[in-house]
Figure: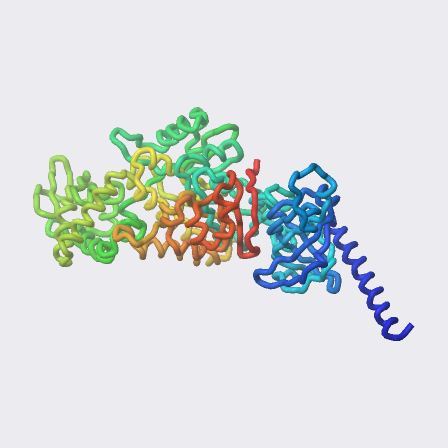
Length: 601
């Protein structure tokens, strides 16, 4: 035997050993069903598919489907490449011979043929290295159905995190799980899907998960999350109260309303420190905080928590309020030989001022200020018999706006906005308190906006409450961050996100306010260990900045134009008519993965 023949024999022996090693490793990670085809070139590039031949017995026993995950263990280099079945081709034996019979007799023997699969490479693993599919694949390399652990590893799914679903492989749910870890959650999540596609179910899974240490702030428009949590755990509720004629005036009254509405036991109500009250709901303690925005405390930044304040009106607002407070401060100077102090102004206005009274009058019973005679003028009037001091707020407001030379159209916008917000009844409601995170005993807090939706159904009212709560929540996290006290991830959960963060191409929506809040919560919140999980069924109404800043997207059943907008048109067949819970997820850790979401019990 010549040296060349011996060298060739050695090469063949080495290749035979490498093939044995490839088959052994493939068997270790799954079930071998076929080999990379010998009958065509095998190319790996951006659009190329890898051909796989599957013997009839393996085809018959493996139930291969389009979209299923398969893996290849290459021979020359120990690389495992993961891919998805792009197409499956079956042919009768006669088709291989080019014979077409006229009578079509039954002959089962001629369908005992090799099945051809076109596999789309996704990623590869070499040792501990995971990377895109870039390496050459050898013909005859064993192809196998990978086990769940291998799929998770090659797809870069974190080992720990909130389990949001299981991988859908070929339309079947398998045991491989999709998780979002703290890093991904801090970089924010957006869930897109039509009504009934499973968005709310997924939000409930994230809320109830105990896979990571977290707290949640949940904005609940319909009471769904209150009803969900009261069957599962102790939690707190921020209950925004709307003022109505003959409305309740104490914490006890408001919490009784809550208990009666949600089927809790009103006999278990226990008011704590004049801030909120515990009530027993389905064997769990719920801490309820009746809440409204104090208009006086937020007077100077009212425009900043009001996304529907026009840009021009917002530009003048702080100057208007500064001038108005100056007028109030000096309105009694000639009657008490001094102007009112800031403390006295606060004592007069804090529990009385509302948007409606800012364009009307405020009357208070005077105490601590001595005035001997009655008087009446444009700014203020006093009746010594009843000791009633009346501030003509509307006149002062109009006077200030005139002095600042505001256009009449801008003045009218401000007055109309104040009238609208007064009709919502969300400011300075009797029997309510401020939002204080340090006084809330639970890690899960639901902002129950159903009380507002039930009475006003106003997007503006809901958005303003949400912005104020988010502002206070951010300030609390910021304080903890600066003191280096907080290490826990806080998730903000918002369904119908387009109503909180709308498009700003309308002159009725302030671009600066909306996008300023998005930047604060999503950009600055990230380093303060805050993550936002948003869901919407109308992404075209959602501010595009949210799409940009949400690094994880879960896309469920959706229309074609939505899928094209977010670059998932190749999944149109999969998503356009998907059953509830079925979707595509892609994240900062991994590329597009078909999943079936789950509901954690």
